[in-house]
Amino acid sequence: QNDRFLPCQLGGFERFQMVLSENMAAMANTSHQWYDSLQRWHLELFLIPASLLTLATLLANPILLACILFSRSLRQETRYLLLANTLAADMLFLSLNLVTVVCNTLGVAMLRVLCELVSAVTAAAYCCAVLTVTLKVVDTYVAVRWPLHYHDLLPPARTRKILVGVWLLAAMYPLSLVIVMEVMEDNAPQRSEVCLILISIGKMGSEMMVGVHIYFTMGAVVCTLLILYCYGRLYWVTKTQGIWQSRYSRARVTLLAHGVLLLLYFSPGLVFTVELVLYQRQEVSQDVRVWINTVNMCMLMLLPRACAPYLYGLWYRDISDTLLAVLHRRRRLSQVTVA
Image (cartoon, rainbow, N blue to C red):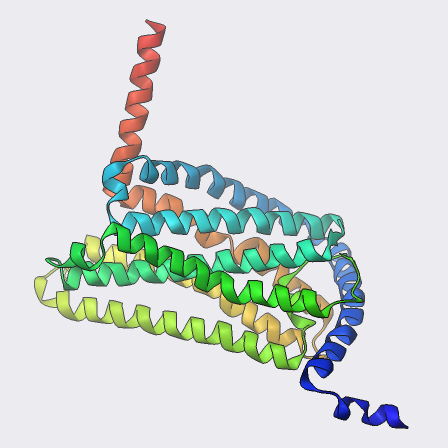
């Protein structure tokens, strides 16, 4: 009889620990059901597009990253430092995402601590890339709005400090959740049949879920408002200069390409928010959750990262010129060696 009143007598810390323990027991069952759904629908076939998109990105990103880091002139420009940070974050995200997808598809049970750490770093890399893409829009706005003071406002040294702050901001909340879960999960299973951020977050209870929703919602709202404000002001400032008159002007095509790329970067985060909501609703079929999560991880999250290096490599003349100069130099060296 006294057991019924036990949750009311517990403090906030003990109550949260009890809820987390109960959710951990349910998590093992959820992981098993998730793996069964993956096998029943043959979703291992999504490994093919996931591997191809990841391979295409990991082949191009290091080349562009090397061009920026080994070129003194490119390293001195803020937009290329931001691009290098985006490429580095994307490479980290893609590597961990592919490892997670392969382990989940093949049924490789990952250590709980390793799974939580991989999930936290993956979330941090994704958030860092989105924040850096937003900063690229701000950088464009500052360069057009105050061209004479641009280098004073955003010198390379200040940009590097900003990027360090972006990484800390992106990693602080996911890593803090890992620490909290490790402190609370005394009786949790040591291995997880399926390693997913969705399941890791879903086991934390309603109180912690509110914080997760606030974190993602506030980040998305702030980034979206900042992008809309910067692009709106850019159009207002430059509309009298005639650069928007031609249908296929460079400014119009650039805005369209960047708008599509930004949409592709932000869309998976919105889909993930929908996944969190559906995960809490018991009336939603498990198969529906598995399908949405698999498509998001194997397709939607990879598309912008596969397009970004080829778009920036072809569109930025300095990078394309550097690439062509390196290729000509290597060809000349090979010809001299043969001769």
